[in-house]
Length: 397
Ligand code: FEO
Image (tube, rainbow, N blue to C red):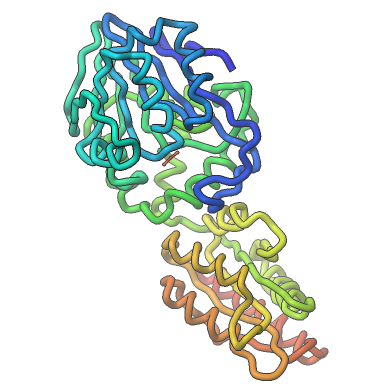
């Protein structure tokens, strides 16, 4: 994809990764691909804000060359060390010998530990500025959004915020702007991105948004490092972040399970019928079959989590175990939960799940439910009632 002008003297010069389907070491299924957004700021001095994943270095260079010869770049701003944004920095610097590398102190350390380059550095902290001529780069440190090195770059003359990973989405598209694509797809991917990457850092998200609001800066465009640029209504994504970071939930239950011979699945569906009969929304997912990234996204606004597994080796099955380990790391707050599962002779899975949920800070509101082999009519009735009881707890807050 060619360079695109996004504001006066500012160009998207990144790369579209149409084919990537797993990200962050397979922790994120990128069903719509992604982009690595890099921005070229052209003024008396020229700055490149972030690079792209290393395999896309030549696309980045080609896009820059459409606007200016790369050797004219004065500043290579690194908002974040992670390889999907810094991967092309070593290659780019070969073409712009006079460029200073700009980032936080932690960024400088992290970049050295990645690439071992002895580059000309300018380390910056919140409030530091670089005057490019008519435009100013202003820096705001954003530690743990989502790495310790993370930083936002802001251009006050253009009311343009370049927050790197924050406010991003994994969407590959020939379109660059929010008003050019389907809104539900955009917000679905933004929610998935928040739930699977940023949720554990919610306290820092709220603090940073509060800090930026108090700075009184005007924002007419947010250009993140992944996906679509917010120009139509930047407040839409800021307000969504506030809601997600506050762990606001709706009357909804996610039932996630892994089954061996479909007994646990029957339990999941019967409990789900019970929950649904109370008017509460239900999403049911076998995590060994469906997209786990999407299940975590569904959990973002769900008040209740019901987790089930068949017993194997006196414990839960491996896919749901891995799923729960990931969920625990996401640190959801203010949720209620319960566990269930089938067994053959000694049980153990439901108890294990209950322990993991407790350790993850989920409030267990009902003792776990187990069934031996295949649930009979009486047990199915109890399972339905189990769901009804859980649904009422969701409704009653
Ligand atoms: Fe934290 Fe998109 O990398």
